[in-house]
Image 1: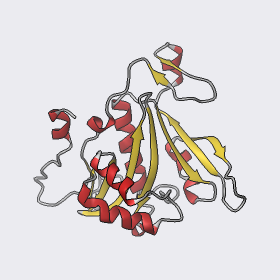
Image 2: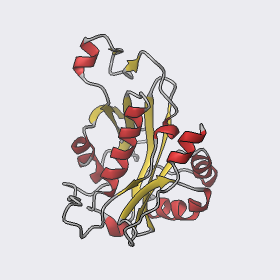
Image 3: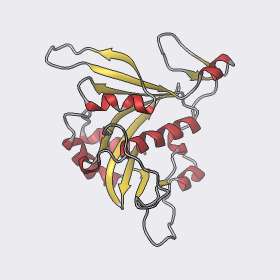
Image 4: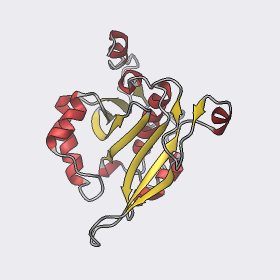
Length: 220
């Protein structure tokens, strides 16, 4: 990662005298205990990752952490393929802060970074019985596949995909689309997504211009 990109990830100084209500930043190795704790809480909702895998996400700077008034409030991790497909294995929000748009803001943050990094698709999986399946279409995701498990005791998984390109770009030949909703590939390779992530601050929640309305259903 270039020095310019590293500088962009450093939290900015706030001069208003009060900390922002919500900040999204790159996760640090020291955040591992919190990430493990939140994953354990949502063990029936998010796909399980072992301790070493979560540590790898943190060390590779592929995990976003959201802070609410300085305290951890949720996280999201991701991978990015050479063809511009961003996969999101986990999105988890503090159970006390559901319906406060934290999940939405994490997803929008990654979406903007993916667009800046010339990626074309966001993709994730969700078990078919989870309330989060009502949440993904609100963020522009489309149900693109259903995966049946080998054992009848396990519920199927839904695959949700969000395209970051539009039909006009495809028509102009700027992007080529594969068959069966394969990743939409841009003509130039995607940038390192980590270099596109920046620190974002929200206004305090009591600010009249914060505009932080709850989502229509609880984020995952």
